[in-house]
Length: 144
Length: 50
Image 1 (cartoon, rainbow over the protein chains, first blue to last red):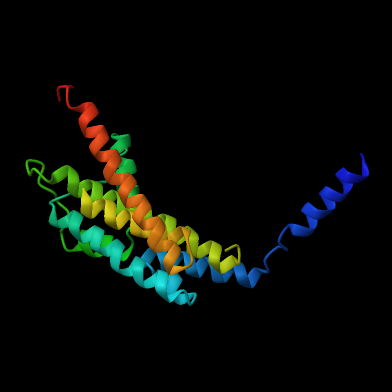
Image 2 (cartoon, each protein chain N blue to C red):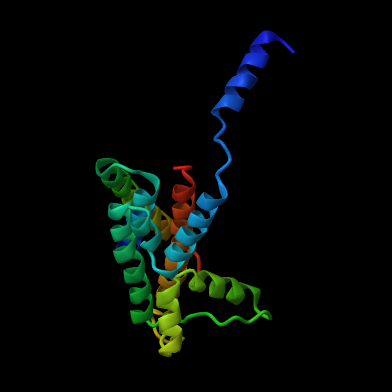
């Protein structure tokens, strides 16, 4: 191994972040759970107010538009793999999803012209909230 | 489509950038890309039957 290679390896090793202590991983898990439950809640809890407020407004708005367009919250039906995936995506919305499910919203109306548009809003808002929750986890661990 | 593109591009931009100016720039860029792609795909798919 040449000197240049050893130096570059030493530089890489020095640049790697130190492993996070256990308390930080607990904090990160709380941020992850909070961000999933309340869109933007994780960022607000971590002091990222601007990002948290944008997520808190945009993601529930997308979810509400999906319900308003008569989209359906997909059922957990293992016999239909794509429907099952859509159900997991919907679940990403957190508490708004649970409220809508308990209130009987999100039954959908298949014959409505806006049905598929509504489904798209519901699924994408859930998937975006999953990304936001993972971002909050990274922020809490100090990776961002 | 415009509402969808606007909200998705806003969330992505805020997720990926930290400065408000950069967020606004990326959001506008993504919004334009979404809308332009939608129109282009619409025109390409026009001859195909449902």
